[in-house]
Image 1 (cartoon, helix red, strand yellow):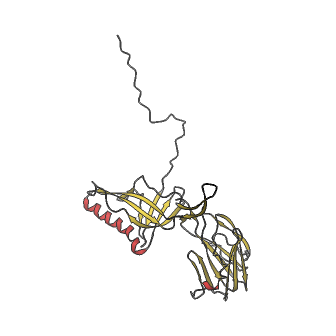
Image 2: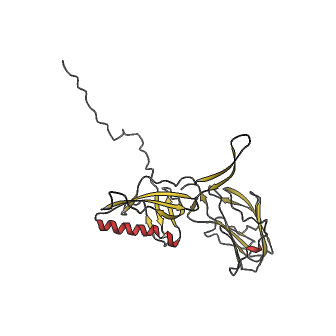
Image 3: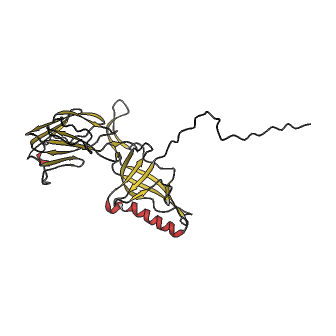
Length: 309
C-alpha cells in the first residue's frame, strides 16, 4: 500500500508585505546616583553589570489600614497610612577574567553601601518618551553573592529601602507671585507674569499624591496669610520683612527661617496653623500680604510625587 507523505512547510518568519510592523516599544533605563554623586547605569549593555528581568517593588506605594470592629458586623477603616517600600533590583555582573569581576563587584558594592554613611541615594527611571521619575533609597542587602557563581560572573539581588514610598519628579516646579514688580520669565518658574499680583490664584499639582511645598517670601511684608481654599487649611506668619529681606517656609520638614536663618516657627499662628500640602490637580490658593509694596514676592515650589515609577 502506498504511503501518503505530506509536505512539511516551515513557517515564514517574514510577514507578507503590506502588513504593518509593530513599532519598537522602547525600554526603560535606570541609573543609580550614589550619595557621593557617582552615577551607575543599571540597564546599559556597555557595563559589566546589567539588570535582570525580575525587578519588583516599583508599583503603587504600600499602605497600612487601621480598622475598628463595627457593631453591625465587619469593620470601619479609621486610618490609612502609607508605608515605606522595598525595591528588589537584581543585577548580573559578568567579566572575562576573575579579577575583572572582583574589581567590578567591589566598585558597584561601594556605590550602594555608602548610603549607610552618607545618606540615601537616588534610583532614577527614565522612559522612552524622555520622562523620568526617581526615589530616595538606602541599600539594605544584596551583595552576598549566589551559590555556584563568583568565578567570572555573579548576581547581586539588591534590596533598596525607601522611607518615602512615593516616586518624585526629577526637578521641582516653582511659581512666582509678585506685587506688580517686573519679574523674569526664565526657569525655574512655571508660570511667571509681570502683571500677576498677590491674592487668589490657582496652583496645579501634576503628581498623583500630595506634594509638600516650600515658600520663599521677599519683603517688604509684615504679615503673610496663605490659604488653600481647596482643603480649607491656612497659616499666618507674622514677622516684619524689610525690602529685599527673605523668609523661607518649608512643610517637609516643617520649618520657618528668617532673613538671617533664625528660627521663626514661633511666628506662626499656632495652634490653628497648618502648613498645608498641595492636593493632586487644581488647588485654589490665596496669599494675603500686609505691608506689601513693589518688590514683594512669594515663590511657591514643590516637587510632584507619584504612586509608581
